[in-house]
Every structure is written in C-alpha cells, then in structure tokens.
Length: 354
Image 1: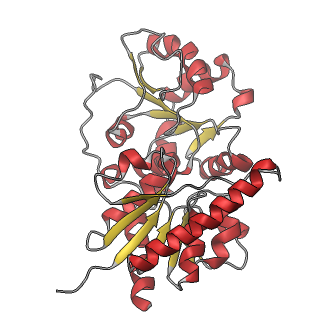
Image 2: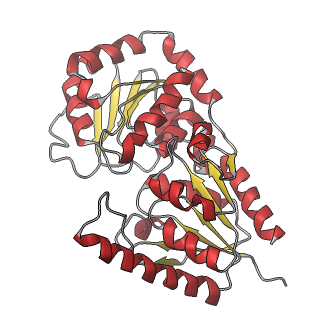
Image 3: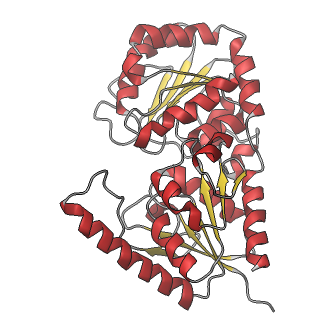
C-alpha cells in the first residue's frame, strides 16, 4: 500500500483565509493534510476536528519601523526554523497557503527545502505578504484576474477563489422561519462583523419591513447594540452556519467586500450592496468591490458617504426593480464554480512533477 502524499496547508486568521483552504482540502481527500496556524485564531475552532493543527507564534509586519520591529523579525526567523523542522521531519511533499502573515515562514521554510509552494491570493489587490514572498513560490493562483498586474514577474494562474461545496447547491434547506413568498434581505459583515454597518442597517429596517421585506442580520459578536431592535420580520444573530442556504434564499445582500464573501455571493448569484471596510489594508476591499460593480453584479458605497436615507431608498428601489434579476445573472457570470477543483489539480500536478 502506497504512502499518501503529505501536504501542509498554511492558513490562519479570518474566514477569508480559512474557508478557501478548507474547500481545497475537501478535494484532496486522498492526501494526508496537516495545518499550520496561529494560537487563538479562528483556525483553532475550525481545523482540529478535521486536520492536525500546528500552531506557531508569528505576527504581521508593522507599517513603520519601531520598537516592535526587532521582536517581529526575531519571531519570524524563529518561525521559519520551526516550520522547516516540521516539514523535514514530517516528510511533507508540498505547501499550500492562502496568504496572510502565516504565509511568510511557510513559504521561506518550504523554499529552503526545495518543496513546491502553491500560493492562493483571493484579493484583487494582493497583500504585502503576497507581493513580497510570491517570487519564492512555484505558482500564485489568483482569485481576481486584476491581481496579476500587481505581481510582475510572478507566474500566476487565474482560478477564482474556492468556496465550500454546499454553496454550489441550490437545494440547501434554510432552517429559519421565513415565509417562502417574501423578499429577503441578508446583512453580514464577514467573519468579523461590521458594527458601523449594523447601526445604519438597524435605522433602515423598519421601512424595509413596512414594505413587506424580511431581514436576516448577522451582526458578529462585537456589536454592543445587537438585539436592541425587535421586530417580527427582523431576525438577528451573531453568526449563522448555513450561509449557503441563506444566500441562495436571499433576494439582496448587504455586505462588506472581503474576497471570500464576494465569492460566495457570486457562486450563489446573490445581488449585493457592498460597503467596503474602510480600514482594510491598502483599502483592498474597494478593489474587490470594483470588480463586482464593473461587472454589474453589485452596487458599492463608501461607508463615509452612506446615509440612512440613501441606503433605505436604494434597497427599496432595488426590491421593486428588474435590476435585481440582472445583477444576479451578472454575479453568476463572474463566478468560478470549480475553483477548488482547479486548485487541487494544480497542487497535484506540481507535487507529482517533483
């Protein structure tokens, strides 16, 4: 009996890094997969039930040189040696990473051992870690075609961003008490929530409900005013596991513009109003949103410019407009439904070639 191929997946922090990696792992069921993460991040909740998790201490680089720089660099060097030892002793045959600061030690350690490195960048504007370390990778798979121009001299392949398999089914049941014939607005801020958006939405909800709509509002767990609004047609939860069922049922979504959330909107064909997170690194969510607005799949507004009257009226006009159907069609057109399969095939090809 042959020994299964061993792959180390380095993905940490937010759903935007973890969910695409988990989707790819689903496609590599014949591989022996282990995970590289950071203590006290989301991976400690999502990964251990499925894959062995190795946690290392590493932090993001600061914008400017300062007192913490020496500590971060020392920590990075230590993390590189830790990962190198893990890869060597574990006889891993390759590394797959979805970006973020966990990628730096994973990429450099794998490179020092001559292992294949497959990097996935989900954002239209690649992050600093991607731009710095992608040159050491075998290939960089990109979630948006626009990302390639920011990675000169790097081998890139457009694969889209993977989503979990349930998003590709239109028959996922929704276990919420929402009538079948009412328009449904879904509001969510990604895995970290969006307190400023939550406040604005709560101000608009009464008029939307008066117009016959129902609203499911996922507030995250950092909103002190969550639960302050009580209305029969308004359901509020910190999180909801069945996002696939929720988005497939939704007529309209109001969302941040993280790459993973946008991918889920595209695959489910959900029209959206996007409010990019204004403090995202290098304003990368605005670049993501532009891909969708240019395709006609969404509308986007700066948080600083969005008011209650504007959001309230825009939602009401969309719910009564054929524009929603056209937006849904455009969203489907930019979806890469088989992204996870493409990435899994790419991983297999590079490891087998070695």
